Length: 418
Ligand code: ADP
Ligand code: ZN
Ligand code: MG
Image 1 (tube, rainbow, N blue to C red):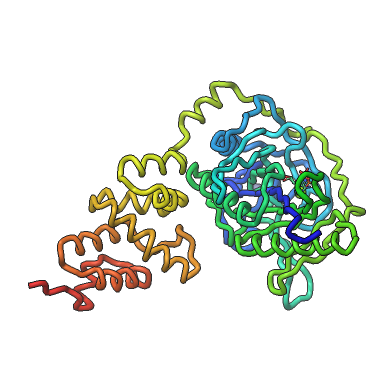
Image 2: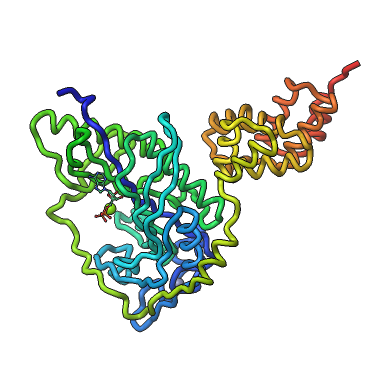
């Protein structure tokens, strides 16, 4: 048997922080980056005698996410307590959903080298985030920041349908793109707004799935891809040497590029789930769900099809542009001003994407406006600057964004064409 006979099987539990203004069970703000313990109140600090009140926006956002991923929306759902002890969880239980999640049985489509593939979603449920432990470099202890405690999350659980690290990346990017389009999460991975628990096993095709290991809280595409490659090879090696893969939770060490054990099945948690007696059941009318469905914005796939039809873009270009709501909005914004679809698409897909890559920036971090990009293209179209100069203008837009006309005047870059 050779190692190439194995297939890797992956299932993801993706957590997205919802961009509601306030927390899930109290009216504290959800905003990231505030001074520790300034976005807290008796409810999210778990003072005795306080009662949670469900934020209706959380239900609406989760239903939006469910509809955008082809889920069935449960008309009858509830909140459950998931009991465990950890210092960042002041109630010693997390309010989540157990057997009646809001959304079930959906799917998203990804592109693979062999064509389109459906990745099934088992469920999407709502829950609250925990606080954050800050390990104190000076006092030698740990300090708890409860600003994040009670920030609303959706957890999107996939079926084990993914078969490579590339498919996992495509799937995560697709989810991110959908959540950004429907504006339920800002999906900032570096701030932890989008993170995944990655379940990995290996088997030989035709045989039953192997035992899985789980890597928790991964929040970079690069780390996820590396961790899967590593874990796949490690498991194959264990099997090839006649051993058994243990079901365990692993920690990915990105610096040394390896996984290590966090806890094994022996200490598998018994969460003693039970319905939260402080919260009422969630009943949704057909009308409520239909109103949300009707208000859903255009999703990446239909935008892509429209770009092909309306602007004559190639399928590949249309797909690249619409994969990110931010690039797509930049395209539409600039196009509305300068009217040159081909040029705007080319600048975004070549030079702008290249610079984003070099600077390791995500599309939402483009520092200049659609208007500034449009102006630059107009200056080329009018013959005021050459495209070589435009490339310099673009570099300048990334460094110190302002009106391109001002840039070329200040730099003396005006082309004398006759
Ligand atoms: P838990 O809550 O204990 O993590 P779940 O039953 O919710 O367990 O499953 C979590 C994830 O594990 C799902 O995304 C599922 O697709 C994935 N999964 C289940 N079996 C396998 C397997 N054999 N290989 C890889 N992933 C798997
Ligand atoms: Zn609060
Ligand atoms: Mg899990």
